[in-house]
Length: 404
Ligand code: HEM
Image 1 (cartoon, rainbow, N blue to C red):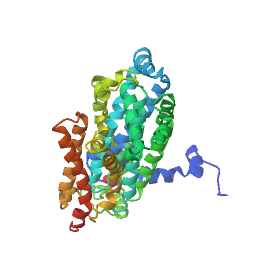
Image 2: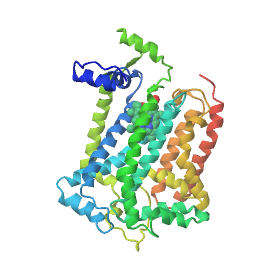
Image 3: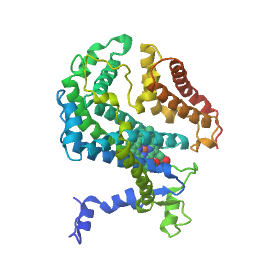
């Protein structure tokens, strides 16, 4: 048993039992952050804040939402939106946050790709980040089912149909997932459980893993500089704060982060109050009807790029291409064969690869939204081929890159 002495203060009492001073040092006051990073490094904090907004608004919505196929639509569109005081506000906060969180995730991911922040000991940060991306995608999809509108129902139908694996005809698997032949009460119940319990729990665990995996390799910087964190932090602690290349996470770096978070929140609440409609599909304001298929079924904007990789091909090829698109970003730290963890602008062919990938994904997103008529079908087809081609080319072009 450890040795305990009579505590001199509450802090001392806690310190003897939980080593709070040590934890505070490791995670805050002696968690060293490079000085040479820009506002793009605030995206992680913005994501954490947006997740908190989703949790809080979700808890308020949960007080009135009814997970029942006969009541769900009205509980959202009538009870919450019109009867409950400020119910509309919580719904708009939740809807806008669910959409904006993906915009920030994509910016955060492409910042990581541009600066090579997935390399040299940072692989686990990348992998845990990708797990978060998958978890957020599942969370968004399951949440979309809950209002039980036309798009909820038909998107649920289309996506669960994918599990029949095309030519393999695994219809039994689709029915097992739905708990019925078509999306119905069992389906709504299980997606409700996933949305409010299992996936949020997984996200919280994954955020802890993501933060934990940042601690040892430290945050990257915008110059691709190999910082000696031990030497630089000693300099800082010895009083040479101007000369040291690092600052404390708390409160120094946090205060900078919070400024960017503040600007983001102005933009966020502007959307909540004046443009919430961008996050809501008009078709979903019609109650679910299994006998009336909407003319054009498409997912929310953040899934459009991967949907467009599925669409231009025949069923089986499309499914393989779609599965490829879902998992391929996990492999980035291993597909990029170059030892250089520096900004893309200073790398060989990778700088063209980066911009080509970004533009291609924007084209895929745009094509995923429009009906599959010409010339959009052909553009989508070539954009999907480009996506696959870029990934195949990645190990070759990065292998050729000279070490800087
Ligand atoms: C959605 C939940 C997420 C949260 C709350 C989150 C949070 C954070 C935070 C606070 C940081 C440190 C500061 C910063 O660079 O912004 C960070 C870094 C990082 N995140 Fe995330 N992140 C999330 C998702 C992702 C995703 C989807 C990816 C990509 C697959 C990702 C990849 C990274 C990488 C590579 C870094 C290291 C950046 C560097 O060292 O410069 N994260 N994340």
